[in-house]
Image (cartoon, rainbow, N blue to C red; front, side, top):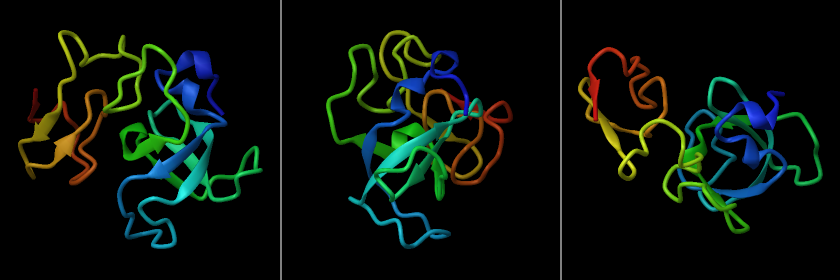
Length: 126
């Protein structure tokens, strides 16, 4: 597991969240289900499990902005994407981006569009 201090979303490790969108490849994870974050990756995503007592062993990987914390967010965390406000894309407020290829909404710091999986360095604009 990545060290929490090394990543913008490290505060999420060990916390409980509600899922905010469906995942067709894992239909057992439904919107509103409470899950535990057991892994934060250097790639920017989180590993989740339905076993709220687990310390490791994720069953689903998602981006931070696909989750809603059960408890209050720590100070300095963006309420829209769950990343630290110092993370890129927050200068002057939260910047949602759209993909030029598919029109899908991307988060402020995601390296690829979650809809079409094309790198944001190829055609994604703020």
